[in-house]
Length: 165
Image 1: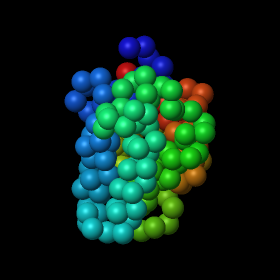
Image 2 (image 1 turned 90 degrees about the vertical axis):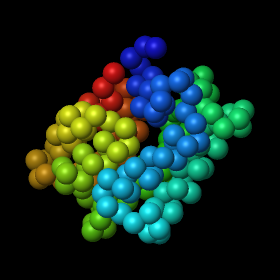
Image 3 (image 1 turned 180 degrees about the vertical axis):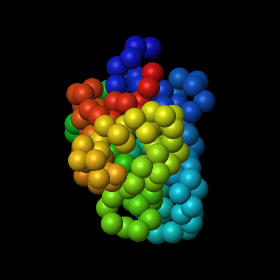
Image 4 (image 1 turned 30 degrees about the vertical axis):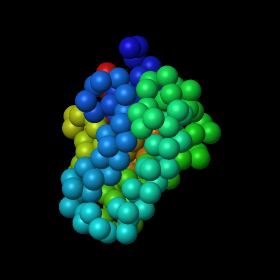
């Protein structure tokens, strides 16, 4: 595999490294984030996130065999896919971690979110530092989603620090 943004994200999603993202691997992100931040698994925001992730998985799984290969992911990923399904799913993970509902995460909440989603803790911290351009110690939801969108679609983003090869 190369070090393209698509390869780096796919490697993060392919938890067991077998070359395919299974339904359980992809939906497991929701449960890991909820657990990492202490959010009850039955909370409505967690249920909404499960539904959003289910929609993404169904969208990615081109041949509907319950596994997403890199080729399926590569042909699916891009600006349209991000806006259609990734934005709601990634935003829902942010919402799980945003325990006070103010639309912002501090460093601890951000690192917990990104680590549970599959990034290394140090890489998540580096991404937080890069996104916190005003130095207020908070990342807002829109900046977070813009950072991921830019990495996915152009490879250039402060969020690149989260996706170490």
